[in-house]
Length: 193
Ligand code: AMP
Image (cartoon, protein in one colour):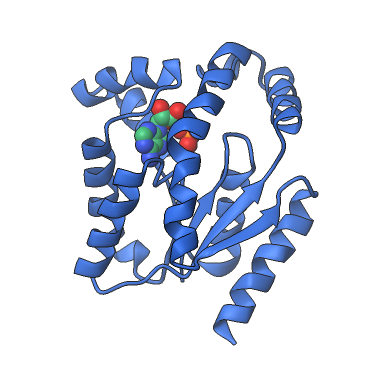
């Protein structure tokens, strides 16, 4: 099973991807986590990425596509994977299609978690309150607003690309975590049946 979890920052993609990894043995590929690991490693690449990420802008398509292409070939992805935070531009979606074709694999679903903007800000406030000083560098109101603008301008336009391929499944991401998880499981069971 190969899935894309799609939705604005704070929609719950990471939470659901982690659960899918545990319950279904699919590998979570969070590009945000991979980039944060590169930043924390202090590598030359990491240092270049640090400011881009802290500003809420997107890292270049070339870097992102290389990162994902390397990753999906690894043995731990052979049973299936969940892309969490990728693709974020139409160019990335097109590059992903080419990679998958080259490796003879298909996408099963693009799961869109739909959450309204007010709820995204409520969740941001809750994360800030919970995390204190450990809050992510891009989890402050100003940068979050910019991340949302970037989502609307560059990432949401990827949806029609997948709608045309009849891959998009919308799920109401405003519901409690367990309810969203059940709905996702329902999709996966239907596909497997
Ligand atoms: P995330 O943890 O998914 O919210 O990602 C955090 C930050 O990493 C984003 O705001 C971008 O700066 C960068 N990033 C993550 N995934 C991508 C991607 N697919 N394309 C470009 N930049 C990305």
